[in-house]
Image 1: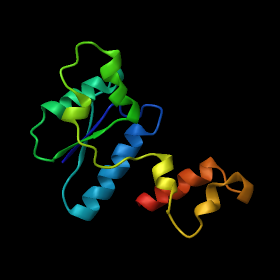
Image 2: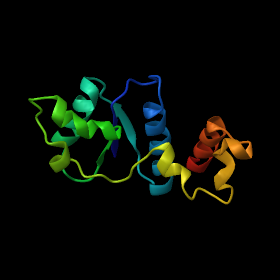
Image 3: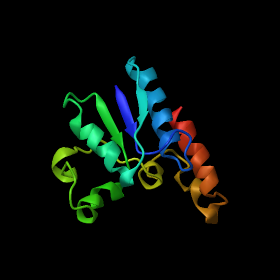
Image 4: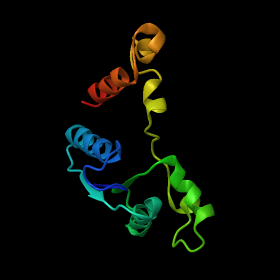
Length: 128
């Protein structure tokens, strides 16, 4: 299994780290190796095209932001159609991980003494 990320290894931002944590978690649970392949550049178009060109066997996953779907409106000559060629599997974002993640769902609410950093620690603990 291959997870293709649009960022350089260790690049600032959570994409590469999330891809590696997700790969480790999936590998441990499914008993199959997951390899993170970094394909940075061109606003995620290089990573997306790599996935589109891969065999359609379900063994290649793409980790890009939602904004990658907008690239069709920004670039005239793409070798793929994001909407037609990419099938979404799961949305990974703080918003999707925040809902229903445990009995203390309000822990990331500043009004309850939590903060965004606290939420990130809980998110990583949930992945492990």
